[in-house]
Length: 115
Image (cartoon, rainbow, N blue to C red):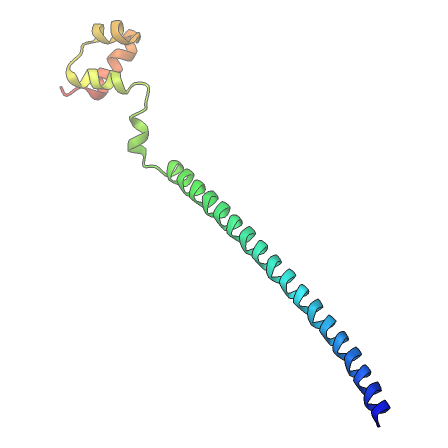
């Protein structure tokens, strides 16, 4: 009986060691999975930030493209000349100050003068 108990004890020790090794392997696998999950989470966060930056950039470009025409006319090359005409400048003043031809100056005065 003692011999049988001794062999049974040895068998249980071997089984215990094998189970303990399996548990350690599972723990190693689990910590590897957790570390991979943290890396993936960080990468997703970086990708999300990048996508949000790109969306913001695209939104700002869309706003630039769809600006109302009134803001575009402020940058018109004749805008300063038109303002002079509205202030009462004559043909000679426009020709000298802006380098316009007589016909251009006359046309602008016709179109934009208050008279």
